[in-house]
Image (cartoon, rainbow, N blue to C red; front, side, top):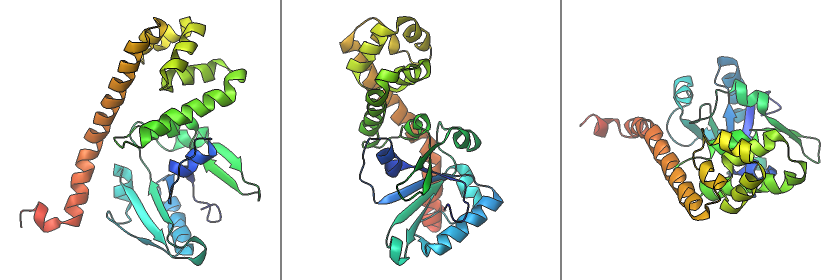
Length: 240
C-alpha cells in the first residue's frame, strides 16, 4: 500500500495490536478514500500482492461509496493466503478526509511507517453488532487510560468519559471530574449515573447503550446485506 502510495488507514484487529489491545486476526483491514486515482493505486497494490477478489460485491466505486467492504485473498508467496479487506465508508465514522487528518502514524523497527485510524475513530468503527467487538472496545479504551492516566489532559479525560465501558473507571473519573462529566452527559446520558455514583444503574445503562448501538448497526447493514444477496443470487431475489 505504501509503495503504491495508496491513501489507506490500517484498522481492525491489526490496528488494535498497535494500540495495546491485542487481537488475533488473519485479516488486514484498511479504510481508503474511494476516488478514481486512489482506486487505481489500490488496484496496482493488489496486483503486486497477486490478490483476487473472493466475494461480492465486485470491485467498483459505487459499492465502496455505499459502505460495502471488498475482500481479497493474496497469492503472493510473501503474503500467501492473507486476506485484505478494504472499506471507504463506516457507520458513524466521518468521511475519509477527517480520519486521515486525525490518523496515528507508527514507525516499525525496520523504519516502515504505518498510518492507523486514530483511536477514537477505531473505537467508533468497532461499534458493530458483532459480539467480539464490544470486549475489544473496552480493552482499547482501558489500555489508553492506563497508558496515559498520569498524563491526563482535558481532551483525554473527555475521550475516556465518552468511551470507557468499565463502570469502576467511569465512577473514578466522574468523581474526579464532576463538572466535565455532567457537561458530557448531554451526549452520553449514562454519565449522569456515573456522576451520581450509582454503580448498579451505570452497569445496566452500559448494557443498554451497547444493545442500542448493535441495533443501529443491524439497521444500517440491513439494506446493504439485501444488496449483497441480490448480487449473489439474482434470480432468487427476482423471484425467478
